[in-house]
Amino acid sequence: VQLQASGGGLVQPGGSLRLACAASRNIFRIDTMGWYRQAPGKQRELVADATSGGRTNYADSVKGRFTIPRDNAKKSVYLEMNSLKPEDTAVYYCNARGLSYYTDDGVPIVTGEDYWGEGTLVTVSS
Image (cartoon, rainbow, N blue to C red; front, top):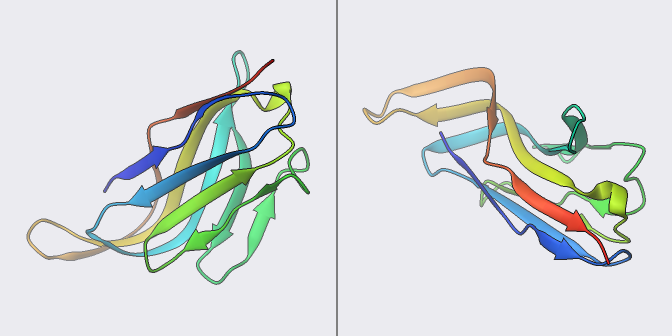
């Protein structure tokens, strides 16, 4: 099971950035996909998540600025970030939970574990 995240970088305050996360091919169902972030010296926090049924949840700090589109067919989730602020600077992590996937031997597995992608750094600075 792998989650591949991309799209981080340096952006000026007020700018926009789009993160993408794709799940590996052996996964055939994901209940919830989302994004967390961790700023230096702070705990990891939820930014936004989305269920397979389309329900979304946002941290208060990003409501109205970020959206979390999800493509179930592509097993992908995105984070569209607008009006970025310096306090959005953090390492962003893709998360998935409630997975069903096939092992290398073709055995279906259902798990409630959390899976994480490698972080991608977002820096908001002038």
